[in-house]
Image (tube, rainbow, N blue to C red; front, top):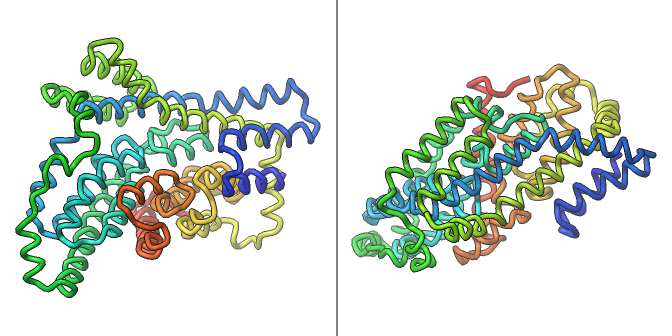
Amino acid sequence: MFITIFTIVTLLITKKISPVVALILIPVISALLLGTGAAELTGYFEDGIDAVISVVIMFIFAILFFGIMQDAGLFDPIIKKLVSLTRGNVIIVAMVTIAIAIIAGLDGSGASTFLITIPALLPLYKRLHMSPYLLMLLVVLSIGVMNLLPWAGPIGRAASVLNMDPVELWRPLIPLQLIEIGLLFIIGALFGWREKKRIEQKFGIEAYRESAAAVDVSAKEMTVNEEEREKLRRPKLLWINILLTAGVIGMLMSGFLPSGFVFMIGLAIALPLNYPKVDEQMDRIKAHAPNALMMAGIILAAGSFLGILEGTGMLDEMAGDIVNLLPAVFIPYLHIIIGLFGVPFDLVLSTDAYYFALVPIVEQIVSQAGVASTTIIYTLVIGNIIGTMVSPFAPALWLGLGLAGIEMGRHLRYSFFWVWGFSIILLGVAWMIGIIGV
């Protein structure tokens, strides 16, 4: 039992095999070694897939929908306007960085957030002598906050552990997410003030004022692959796309229809609306299919993994063994202990290992002490979610580092403790507003 989890975690950390292979193959081998027959194994697999299929549907169509909206240029006017409003003020630049990253993060993808935010703002940071590591830190914190969206990876993974609809899991987190956004802007202002003082000390006040006065970010500097993106933009449909997106999000929050169905309808409207030709529609689907299928494949593999672990009784036995080893006084607080160290866990565990290996075991243990499963999951998610982009196991982080032209080691030294501190603050806020507890 423990060998199964240890093997999966080790393989994921060392990147010897992909998450899909690890989550499918290792549990199957373990189940066969325990004497599980083909019929039983099929039943466990089907139970696991049934539990996550609604999550998979939502992921596929949510990623496609928001990808189409980005292609059509839904967020471009807002981003350009925000950049123009900075007027070389370092404090405002830091706050605008957060605003752009939040808007770019609406699709729940860290990679697209980096692709939109860093090329748009890096020239501005360079002209003002601002550190690219500050740019990276602010984007990383924003991605962590936007990862609470139900179509982002962490909430989807957590929902699959509880066999819940991600939107249903997310709704109680909406007040926390709004508070987080407000805190982010306060933090952005403080970091901007600190950066302004650093620049003045290093280059002198006059040099700072001259660089600020000379700021004029051109459209070419603000985007990548500008010619290709221009062909895809639909500026005349901007307000229609805004209304469509607002309608989709409103339907999600209302719970009137299943989340996957909402995104299916949204995509079915968005595609012919923005790209009337069938070939154009297929090209847009192909462009975003890799991201959609990657997450769908991982969630389906996780469904198989959890179905086998629960069906064979391995999860119950592992939880029971750990309970017997731990002092009884720790059991009701184990999720809080793990949550407080959620960001450091990102340095030794991949996101998949954290959510599919550690989280189910902790949930199984603590729930036996009478703590609600949703409370346990919220604690583990909130404690970890901000730290996703300080993990060397996050592929999107390497993309962001490359775009910003900075080093992983220095990024960790610059950002790690700020990110960890922010996650602890969020746990405190979640406790004060009653989302988590014991």
